[in-house]
Amino acid sequence: QVHLVQSGAEVKKPGASVKVSCKASGYSFTTYGLHWVRQAPGQGLEWMGWINTGNGYTNYSQNFQGRVTFTRDTSANTAYMEMSTLRSEDTAVFYCAVWRNAFDIWGQGTMVTVSS
Amino acid sequence: NFMLTQPHSVSESPGKTVIISCTRSSGSIASNYVQWYQQRPGSAPTTIIYEDNERPSGVPDRFSGSIDSSSNSASLTISGLKAEDEADYYCQSYDGSGFVFGTGTEVTVL
Picture 1: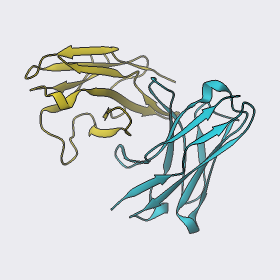
Picture 2: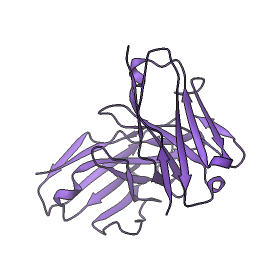
Picture 3: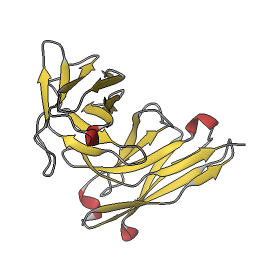
Picture 4: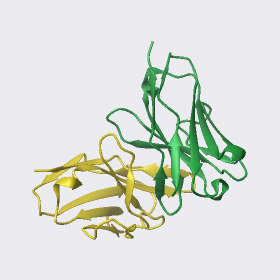
């Protein structure tokens, strides 16, 4: 069965960085790209970008370019999202998701709270 | 990039039909497939429509999708509304620059 399991909740101070992991199972990790989506409390879904898990190519949404880095470890079937220079408005749930003909596999979400 | 605009909320009684619109701000709605997701509180989204009007297995045929080039919009129709349909719904599409989610619609079953 296809699963994406994300790392646990994080609490960070403004200006810090956070790294969220997304471990895939039940399929060949390098077959599908891995996308990241942000959802602030009470707000909608926002696409952040994606990583080609085969060759490491990344594509970032303009809203996150320069502040987010996607990486992957194919030996661990795991993708990572690192966001730097956190501010309070970055408080959100971050999801990883696989795109096939839709975002049809999602991680459970990781809550990141930015607070002094 | 383009935007996808949805009504903030819709409400209807059980057994009735609701239609949620999703209007694309620039570029043709027909140029890239539209997907629809249902999100219940505290849960990740799930796909209910892909490629404009296709349903994943397990999604009831009460859910249907369509596009209308004249209004440059997509629509999600939920017929025979049930209490379990109460959730947030998002449309989503893409272009050469990336992927875009709609603003989201809260569906309330009265």
